Image 1 (tube, rainbow, N blue to C red):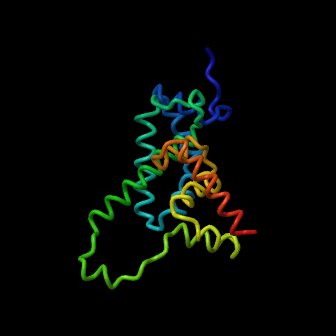
Image 2 (tube, rainbow, N blue to C red):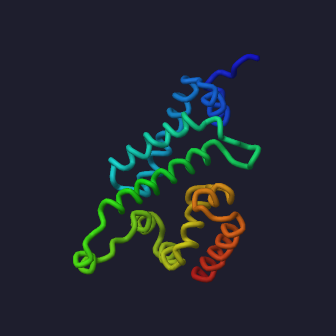
Image 3 (cartoon, rainbow, N blue to C red):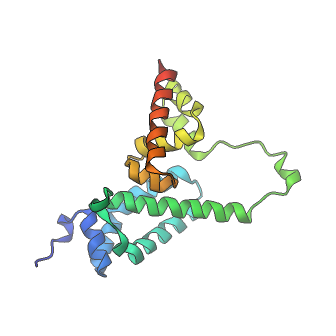
Length: 185
């Protein structure tokens, strides 16, 4: 069987070839997806050191676990799978950082809450009315909406990313759309 040239292969094919140890396919997958992944991670984390660490951990995990990618057979995409790995690594990095940087209780009381980076980015890019409606959503509804609408993930990918059952994701997406519709009418 003749191998498809790398420039003609889609991301799923590149992951499958990576699973067989094809270093050139892995390098092509990295070349195609790393700029996009870097932008997505930077939207969620302003610390370049953490972003670089997550990028490295993500592609190491892709190299090691490419054989576990189920692909279209489960309704997923290679890019969605890659993002799920990266998002989990980012959450792990945040947890490690929070674990090592807990403030003493007397300091914590004097610190004003800082808005999340995503909220700041949303406020800067989305008009006042829509931005206000998004900010007024319950955090669990906003997380589902951001994953599905802003990140373009499927219900299944959003469920994996957020660690929720698919039915819960569908319910929250419906509630979020209804709440947005109400707020904007």
